[in-house]
Image 1: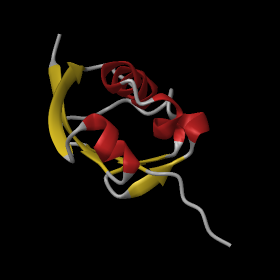
Image 2: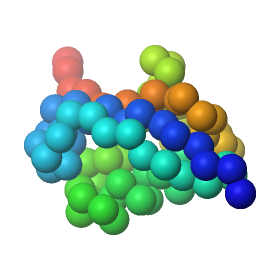
Image 3: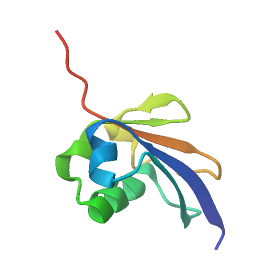
Image 4: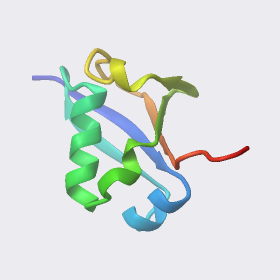
Length: 86
């Protein structure tokens, strides 16, 4: 099985919970964004914070598509904190 390397960047409260701003992770070739999200939730026990917004290569991805997006070698995944405003 081929290994896929992705760069994961954490912002705001999520970087505080993870204890880092960035890391390179290796996954399997059929790993989805949903799989990676679950891995991050479990690894850092970040709870609902990672349910915020996830972007891939600078483009936001709808949560309904997390299971459809298969990670590609070199992807940059950004876990962004919840946005608030008014």
